[in-house]
Image (cartoon, helix red, strand yellow):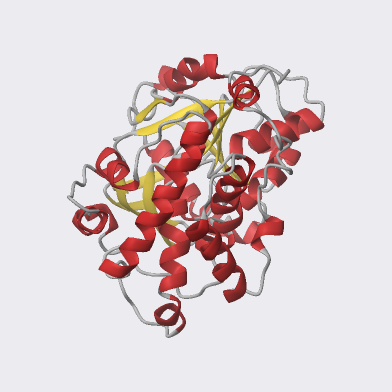
Length: 369
């Protein structure tokens, strides 16, 4: 229900008007907050500009009135407390570059989600642009909504996840960001640090491998439920191997991350003795159809910005990731692309050759020394 207490209204910028951006912008507006919706291109905004609102169906129902729909970054983030970035990870760097000249003290930037090392990349960009404003850069472990846009200003929310860790580049500021986010979302909980939220990126386990192993059906243009029917016993074995490799990379830098099966219980309260059982019991995945093309973000985002940084970190600490490497190679071949060269490698992030101690210093906001 919209919040009738105007004194508690906040001004929030949602950057991105895709499946997730529409869901977040509409829901926040429905809660009674003033929402500025930014998109790089005008075409994604015309429906919202025409209606003045986002129509939400599913777990949340109603019309969220949008205060401003714009392609101007300066106008979108002017006087806002929270800047919610809800775009594929390949847009994080560009958005950071566009925000840099307009940021002011006290603003909170939150990536929904960061995928793998998103907050680190955004902070790197802001530093390179000599941003003097005292802003907080954070990332969520996953996106709070399972949602799909159903029209130019319509979105269906299949499920709102239960528990989403958030961490900041300066770890001591995590409580500040959580307190701010909980004004809108009680689901956000403190994460330990940005390396843990990044390495608990479960999209890296599910998305690319499911697309690669169902490539024939996807190209055959067949309707099937991506997470329920696309996961067979054999496919789930590959997902479990990817998950095991991800966990080992995290252990190499002294971080214990949850498994994909544990994550399903934490995010959706979906339990099972095996990964496939937990996935098939998850009602939040019910009705989510497979993509219609391999030229989509589950490969074009989740390989270079989820799997590549995990494998790159593994290489740095001598952790073998053969299954992850295979999916990177196969996905690159399927789309005639070199996702490794496009991806967030440790070299591009400026952390190549760093020790565990040096990485931990970065996580708490101290320069490595």
